[in-house]
Length: 239
Image 1 (cartoon, one colour):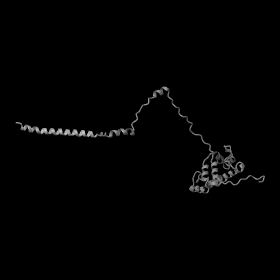
Image 2: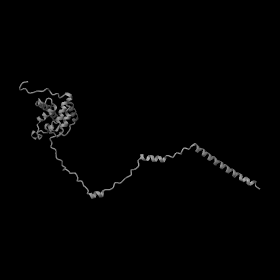
Image 3: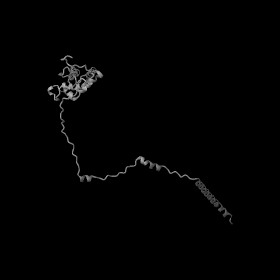
Image 4: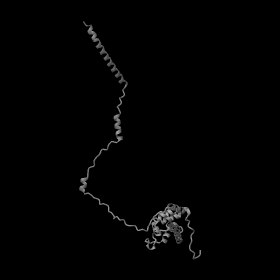
């Protein structure tokens, strides 16, 4: 390398791994501390962040290309700045001018969406896959000073703590409530009521005694009937 030659690095493989470095670059651009410097202020005199675009590109290059940054910090910074300017800033500016050729015309206002807006979006996304992500970043205005809330700060309501005498007067003994029986608890009771008592099982001796009692009862009844029939006959035969 000649003494006065500028240091050089191989081309950055932006398209490798499905444009992984480009997506990482968009993520870094979307951070507020970087975005408000790169896109937030159009007038350098109004830049209140205290950083320059060169410093932001340097910080982004250190994140994206840590293996090249220590020895080629300036070259990496310029590559990052060129990538942002060529692939993001210029395409957006060209598309804005194409979409609004006459911004002073009364027939078209910047807030209006043209008839072919959907087709235009699809066409841009087809040609430039990073457009939706970049559009979501550029849609915000990080440089706008947030307005204070019109409502005054409110204080939480003060707690009304009662005195000891009031608290004692309001205290009530806890009432003991007998919990109602659940369906599970009442089921055995209802079942015991509905089920009839089964007769006790009798032995063989009990059955013999019962049969003898019925036989004696039948014989006594038969004897009483015979006596009732014989009595009128005796009355007839007597003189």
